[in-house]
Image: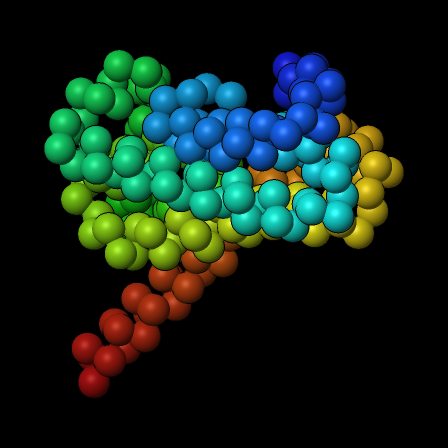
Amino acid sequence: MSELLTELAHWTDGFAQSDWSSVLLFLLAFSESIFFPIPPDPLLIAIGIAKPGSAIWLAGLVTAGSVAGAVVGHTLGNRLGRPVLNRFVSDNKLGYAESLFEKFGVWAIIIAAFTPIPYKVFAILAGVMKLPIRPFLLASLIGRGARFFLIGVLIYIFGESIQTFFDDYFMWITIAVGLGIVAVVAAAFALSRTRRAKGAER
């Protein structure tokens, strides 16, 4: 992770044992999918390491908060349109997100869970592009669930010893997984088009 995320994780250490830590974790995940710039991963890691026996449950809590916020973001995009994105997203990030949607459709939501681009961009853009709510919700559950449950399961198995791994490698692993998903989905689309072309020739 970056130094900023590491420092944020250290800041949350003193808060991790609080009775309100789970509430903050849910609210952070919820708001990050709409407007907040800080991802919930550092807080999930800090609280999970403080309470490793609850790590998987916490992963489910973060997934629920993130998906609930994404639904709000989708609704805002659907009703307010592109201007809501232009206020806080750079043209480069928005252009990249749009290119993923154009190539992969709903699969872009799953890919988004493992890319550095904030998830809220994809959530709101899905609404702007009128992606139906049901496939959006399913893709969000799969993508965000995979990301956060990966963290939860690793903490549950390895406990505090996993902290250094997260600090040094987790961001790069998520990027690698994201690129892998892009490659697999692209190959699947290419294979599907090839089969359709052969069928049309017959």
